[in-house]
Amino acid sequence: MAEILISPDELVALAKSEPCVIIDTRNPDAYAAGHIPGAVNLHEIFTYLATSTPEGMEELKKKFADAFGGAGLSGKETAVIYEQSMNSGFGQSCRGYFLLEFLGYPKIKVLHGGFDAWSAKGLAVTKDVPTPKPASFKILPEAGSILIDAKTMLAAVGSPSIALLDVRDVDEWIGESSSPYGKDFCPRMGRIPGAVWIEWYRMMKPSAEGPRFKSKNEILAECATVGITPATSVYLYCFKGARASNTFLALKNAGITDVRMYFGSWNEWSRDNKYPIEEGLPTAGEKQAKAA
Image (cartoon, rainbow, N blue to C red; front, side):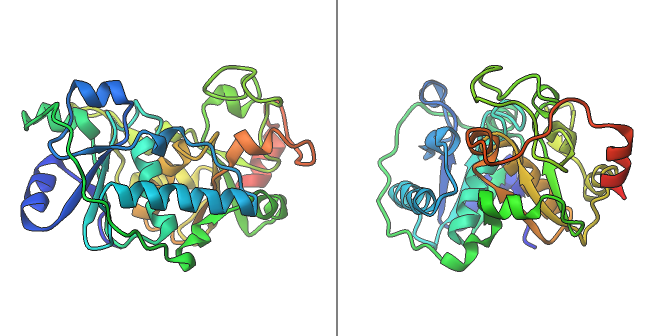
């Protein structure tokens, strides 16, 4: 697998050697205050809430094929995506990476450390807004298998061959809050039955320059705590697919080959009463059974 993460110095070299489209996923105010030269602002990468109905999936494809094409991505350019730092944007740069993977885009990088890493290097920052040349963005439908819908997630509940991995914050996992946007943002609190839990922050560790992804072996060690190995099929979810995208990138980088995401996540699951939930603290017996 090609390396997804790229350092600021590597981005400088890459931009000189081949066509790149740099995408800033931060909010418009942060972008306006200063951004990497040439970067296009696409904050909807973070804000868009998807549903996993057939209509919702078609809308998701069209929305982001248009957005990425408008930013200048034709398939020839390397897409480089960044956020403020790896933990301040709830995985929003990785959500951009996941969306591009879902659409089948061939060349994608994520700026490791985000804009903070770029600024810390003393590299150029501008307030100038570029005018990208729109391109024809081609969707490769066979790439969409990394995204699963609510029915597929429901069918996997109780399956011994699939790990359902919840990466939300602890208050969401135990059902004390329904979302990062407030306790009662969604109608129900809890988790998908049978899910195991690794809080998304655990895929990263502090450094002098800010949070960075852990090494391959460190990530595999975190996964082993809930019984996930490189051979495990993993179905990820969070609230809307941002934090889970951070984990998706981490697991793929660590060599776990079959990783997919329920992109509708808790925002969708909690709003439909036909989907079961668990609440409260899991028992010791449940923990042992899931890790076995």
